[in-house]
Image 1 (cartoon, rainbow, N blue to C red):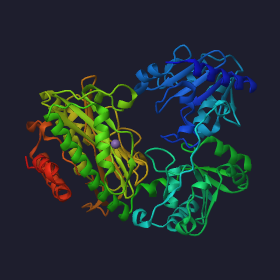
Image 2 (tube, rainbow, N blue to C red):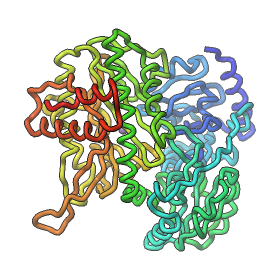
Image 3 (cartoon, rainbow, N blue to C red):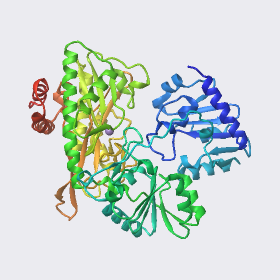
Image 4 (cartoon, rainbow, N blue to C red):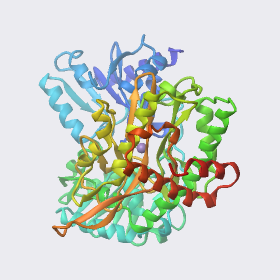
Length: 596
Ligand SMILES: [Mn+2]
């Protein structure tokens, strides 16, 4: 690696630091929108260090610098970052602020950009640093931006006006509905920080970042349903005013401070866990009364309306056609002795998906993992040299698409040759969990935390487990990772409601040997009433319609009921997809969905 550009960049940043009399500067992998994906022009940590991972932080000091990454990136960070310039630390075991305690002298100053942290983070950071007599200094301007020559240009890609045939509810209706909720919470106005929530409120989508079809921006939604949307107005296409209906004003993002300053005396709902600290500081300065609360859009956005649920069903059928074409092709290639590498496989799958109607882009970076690579749950073949398929093992492919009518996310584990009995046994335990969760019925009020064990029970009985959640929420032509509901051991206390979409993705990972996961998307549906109370009974409908690999089954481990579920599922898959396939693909589908 060439360390010269990075050593020059560090020196430029240090020159800025001395101008502000800073002893340390925090550079998180984040931007002012605090989302999972960053546009290239906001990859500040990568510019400074060379590290391109999706999480991490850098601390620059006068004489040294440190980078912090989690367990996914311990290898990658050593390949990308000069250890002569940066010491490497664990983001989890030794996070930046704790590490700084051992580095700073009394009274020393730590600079941070309040746009890139939440108020909740700031509160705990202030406490920690004050205890050791260090000062946290909010910076008016981002010091990286002042040093970043040739920073990529922020392209103004036009927004898309999403018709009601896909959104199912007009913007005026949505804003009135959420406005009432804001009033009920005792506020005059809510700061809608999440760009996804603004996209939902205005029925618009954008192309500002990969995989997540957003227009970057934020907004103020008033109790009467009027909204001010802060974004780059150049992105707003003709016909917007007619599309969103009455009461929406589009303003430059740089104008938000001015608007905030006029909110003195108003009660403003603000989410201290999600919004950035800068917006909070502006509101407090204006004399507004800031009311802590969660994003009032999050829950209504998570509960898909009937039009969106139908869209999810429809896009899952088209997505399944692409997945089946890929799986049929893969079997034929392996049979012909062609063991492709992970990049070729991901590209082939993308080609089938991109040919589907209403396809826009992938919903996340495809995880295409052969053999031992699949044991890393967040493996990305683009981070190093892609591996080839190896015989008598398994291949894991986790992928998804953004379609105008919905978002997909599916994982299938495929037999390459004849995997050993141990692999088939593990796969069957994972699939049993996937089936158990898909089949459960539960009373209204039940949260994902109560259901999580259903997917783990068969693994637990054998002393096995997986170190990730069982399910995440999924947006409707929005984020593939959407809250507030989830299915997991912890942090899954939001009750599941009709229309919510969640993934069902138990897995098993044997370090350096193999990894497997079965992932379907489910939508919560009504299933009648509880017998002894008038409480609603709920169930899941499985949206994903792609066969599971029967070559990986250990038949002895499946109960009669599980076998019946699998046969019924495969027969439904065949009925839905066979009219859409022909030739070798159709023959493959008919073969792999025959009753067991
Ligand atoms: Mn998933």
